[in-house]
Each structure stands twice: as C-alpha cells, then as structure tokens.
Amino acid sequence: MSRTKRILVLLVCVGFSAFLSYAIRQRSPKSILMCDFGSIYYGARCAHQHQDPYAPNTVASVLTGELASNGWQIPNDPGRAATARTILTVNVNLPTTLFLLAPISFIPWTVAQNLWMILLAGLLGFAAFLIWDLGAELAPDLWLLLAGFILINCEGMLLDGNSAALAVSLCIVASWCFLKHRAETAGAVLLALSLLVKPHDSGLVWLFFLLAGGVLRKRALQTAGVAAALAVCTAIWIAPLSPHWPTELHNNLTAVSVPGGTSDPSLSGATNSGAGQIVDLQAVLSILWNHPRFYNLTTWLIVGALILIWSLATLFRRTSPQRALFALASISALSVLPIYHRSNDAKLLLLAIPACALLWSGKGATRWIALALTSASIFFTSDMPLAVLGVMTQNIRISASTLTGKLAIILLHRQAPILLLATGCFYLWIYLRHATPADSPAQTRPRTNALAADAAT
Image (cartoon, rainbow, N blue to C red; front, side, top):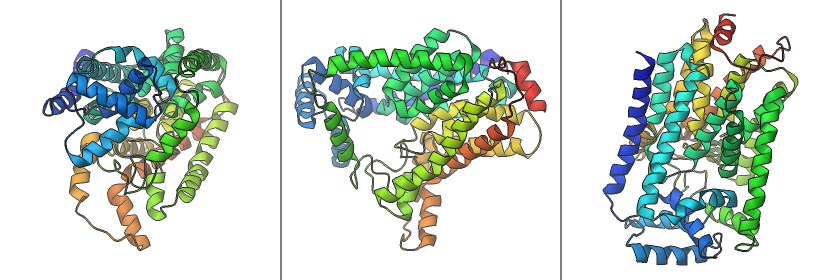
C-alpha cells in the first residue's frame, strides 16, 4: 500500500469518528451533548458578560439564559441531565483554557460545536500522520493498524468535545517539530498551548525535552517562556472577573470528586464506566480499598518511583534517536496513571507507536511483547471496545468482600490502568537497557537510517 493510500485510510478512520459523533448529536436536536466543550464555551461566555466562570450558580444562571434565548436544552434523560448540568456549570477548566478558547465562544453554539469537532478531528488526523515520520515508517502496516484504530475510536471524544484531543494533538505535533528539527519555534508555541490547556497530558513530555539537554532543553525553555507569557495575560484577564478563582476552582474539583461524582475513580463514579472512563491507577486501587488517602498515596509511590527513574535516566544519559522514542513511549503510558485521566487522554499512546514499530522491525521476544502491550493498551482505552465491554459486564455481579472478588472486578472493569502500567514499565526497561553514555551528543535528530541501524543491534 502506498503512502498516499495509507494517509487516505487515516482520513477515513477519523472521518468515520467525526461522522458518527455528528450523527449521534443529530438524533437529539437542540440538546447539549457536547458537554466538555460546553463547559469551556459557557465558562467563556460568563467571562464575556463580566461574570465569574468559577461560581456554579453564576454559570447556571448564564447557561439558563443562553439556552432559553437560542432554543437549546439539557438532555431530557434524568440521569444524563444531572451529569450534563454538573459538567456544564461546575467549571474545572484552567483559566488559561478559557482564555485561549474564548474567541470561539463568540460564535453561536450551533456553529461553534461543529467547528470544534472539525478542528479536533483534523488535529488528531494530522498528529497520527506525523507519527509515521517519527519512526513508524519502519513498520508502516503496524503504524496504520494502530494509528487507524485510535482514530476510528474517537467518536466519544468528539461527541463530548473533550479538550484532550487538542492538548494531545498539539503535544505530538510539537514533539515532531523538536525531534525532526523542523519548525521548532512553532513547536514551542504549540507545546505551550498544549500545556496551558491540559498540563497533566503534556507536562511529562515537556519534562523529557527539558531533561534531555542540548537543543531539546532550549526548545523546552522556549516553550516555558511562551506558556509563562500567556499565563500572565490570562491572570490579567481573569483577575477582575474571579479574584478568588484558585479557591473556587479547588472547590469545584472537590465537588466533582465526592463519592458518586463525575471525577470519582471508584466504581460508583457517575461517569466512570464504558467509554471515557477514568484510567489512572486510582481506579484500580480504589477497588482494593476505596479510601482517597490509600489509593492516592499508593499511586504516587508506585508511579512516582517509575517517573523518577525515567527522569534520572533522561537527565544523566545522552539522548539518541532511538532512546527518544523509547522515552516518549514509556511516558505516554505512565503520564496518565498518577493523577486524574480518562481514556480520552490515553490517545497520547500515539507516541508509543514509533517505538513499537522500531522493536517490531527487529528480532527477538521484545518485538512480540511490544506489539502485545501497545496493542492491548490502545484497545482497552478505545471508545468502542470500552462501550462494548461496559454493556457485556454491566449485569455481572461480583462480591467485593473478598480479595478474589476484588481481583475479578479489576480484570473485568479496570483492564486499562493495569495495561498502561505494564506498557510504561516495559518501555522504561527498554529505555534503561539502551541508555548508555556511549552516544555522541550530536545524535539528537531521528533519521530512518539511524533508527534502522539501532534496531539491528
């Protein structure tokens, strides 16, 4: 299959997701289904009206007026209505997100939601295409299979309008710019935007560039400079509207994290089953003991230790083209585990595909382990498989009173965090195994011939 045909396949895959999300919205005309984007949109609308976007009662008042004036409404289903109203009115987005996306809130909702969907779909498709040039060309069919599967399973993300699609896509494009030494200034701006929208998605990728040294560290510092400048502009913008926004944002985060809330990682979480479920390690540990102090502390002890090892390896050992791919593959899986992340954020696994392709082009058992773990992690964080598994297991009742029962529940309902942890550990092992100080500092530009030579050793 030619490169052009492979690109067309990617376009068909992401186009299918966009069409499906649009069709679902059309089945419920005049209902706000794109709630994640709506939270940003109506939060920015509050700011336009000189109202506090972090005061739920204020947002609810503005939302009610906006819906009444344009004929839109919250979904009629009682269960969905309560969750949708919480997402729309209890704003948990950073002020930088509202500031950056404020221009689109001037557009009427009917047009804005479709433009947003097209933007997210286009960026995801472009990011998947650039993954080819980061090293996935060593195994083009594998790249097409894994990247295409991710793109064809974005309908939930596009239906909700989740900003993770924006943050992940910009992060991947910026990584390509830095590693390929092309349009690096643009890359710094894009990575800064990604950090300002969802720092918990791209923060550890930025940390890699900072710790790697050389020109990559320079790009990371440029990114920090751009992010700082935009953050100052945001602070000036938000201060008159919400002078106590840090406290209000903290209160909002606490409100949605209570037992049964939309951010509760346990099985009782309002939106923690099926597609879009929470995939951080707390979602597993909460089944063993549903106490925040236990599952938060244990998560940080486990994942924090792995990230520390990864950071020290990056800081004290030189970066080569191959090792950069392994480092990004490892952190793409580990970064979604320590704090709140959903399966939408796991689209960052696109960064693991070049490393998987590199290992697959070699020999030995590692090629099969890489394929199995990467494929399984992508599968169990994808929308359609999660939706099907949710339907298949919803009527299965297992007692959580015994350790055996708890383990069975984890295997049935929480496969993703376990697989992400295994994938992150595997690529970290590969990264450490190849992290010797023998390379020249000049080896920072990934090239196909350099990757192929590394794979053969």
